[in-house]
Length: 464
Image (cartoon, rainbow, N blue to C red; front, side):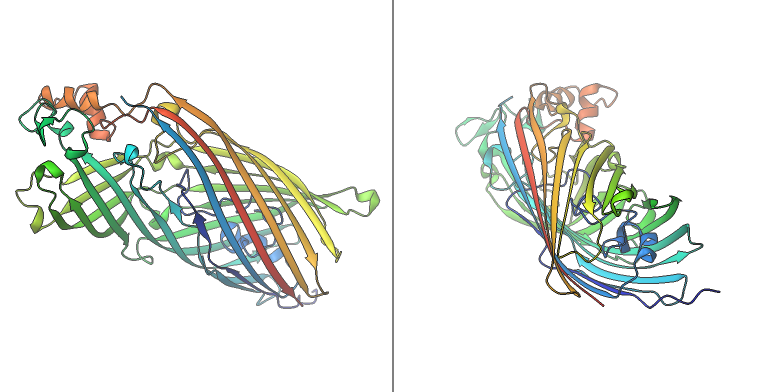
């Protein structure tokens, strides 16, 4: 029998991960956009992020280390609408074959576009913040095969702010678009008929309804070629997550502008995902000084088709307010692929790496809105490592995701569907009423959408 390997401890910390400026969740709300895609990380790479990304890869490490990192995300968004966190973790090789791990982290906040009056029927701000605690293990079945299991307990806080066109919801009826709005005909998108909703909800129990199961394996295909695959379940392993809290509703000016308070529940179906990476040392005849990394991710984001918002309470009785509203996202599944090279870590003072990638569109042009801007995109990630001493390493990385401008001329969001459905007596066999039921029968989202995402990662690692 071989000698037991020296115990390995990895501690990871992500401090102050936050979105700077305006942003939004494109496919996987609350996710670090650089995870797996970033240089020095991956589903077949031993790294602090592997506790969640692929716990099977933890057993590939051989050194004790302390890892401290900070990630900042900046979303630059340009919309021309037309009318009509801390993260701490530890990994311990308790036995020759078993690796134990624990991590706690706060992810970069997703922030929705705020304070843009022209976009009020889609978003007036808000966002999502996730706090996570994960624990798991990796097991070395043989020198060629490792598998791992971890559970992430996710506590989600979600805020949604938006307006409802109270006149549009009346069709041509008594309180509809032909009615009076402070001395003028209301029509569509009259500010006097805009009713504001501010919803603040959170995961009631991250243990009962917020847990995410991460399953993975890493196998050595041939010498120096490793393949890693990991699967991540939706939170709670259920069809929907239930977030509960409160809502503040500000009545339209034409209705007096009263402020009402209520309870609120938001039902949302978060995605599952699969991460894959192949990692191999290359240029073996020259000392195998480089590693090739090819990775990808499938995200079942078609589950996140809408926020199902319910508001209820004593103050809402007889106030002519809808109890149930669908806030569409319109997402479908996405596929991302990236590849690049990095220097093999053999104790060099300076180490570099770079990756490029592509990601499929997360939403069709017709369903693009200020809440969801996710056309096909290109990614570039670069990173460098400076060894300050034999034990102390400083790492820095930058990631860029470029989304080409989307010009939406035929929007799935069409207020005429609301009018046709109301005037037709709410016949839900019609296409117009189907649009009402799915939340698309609101003021149009037609316009031009541009987006550019920056991600900066800075880390310090101490190994012994």
